[in-house]
Amino acid sequence: YDNGMELERYPCPYQLTLKRLLCDHRNAQVGKTADNGGIQPKNVFVGVGSDEAIDLLIRIFCTPGNTSGVGDAIMITPPTYGMYKVCANVNDVGIQTVPLTPDFDLQIPEMLQAVTPATKLIFICSPGNPTAKSIPLSDV
Image (cartoon, rainbow, N blue to C red; front, side, top):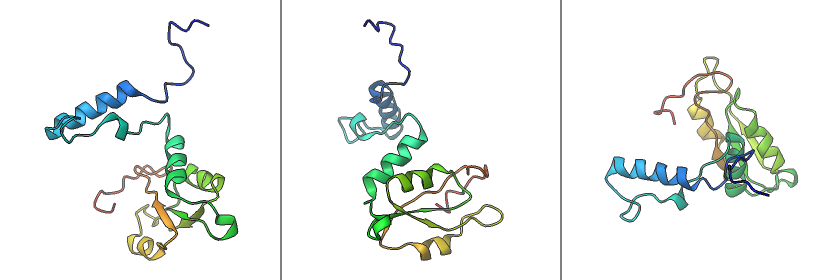
């Protein structure tokens, strides 16, 4: 099989060239190099879509066991992107919900109150899906 044209259905999962370019750009912004305290490609994650990134974050930071009452949990703020819940369910991770206000703002005091030792990730979708509302950085 000759794939000299490099035609793949999916992009290379390693994305080494893209990671190097991202590092070079960021390091130039802060006056560093990869060899002098800057970020290196091995420390950059580039996914082939948000679903992959969400699933990997949950797999990395959460211990399964929701169905047996011993696992970790994520927090979401509905209405929000549906894949947070799907990935949590697939990975047997609990889901804590703190709904957005009627104006689609975060309820920060309620979110902080809802955090438990099981809470390992808090997903804040900005701009919101399906709301399209941007969450102010000061709220994050």
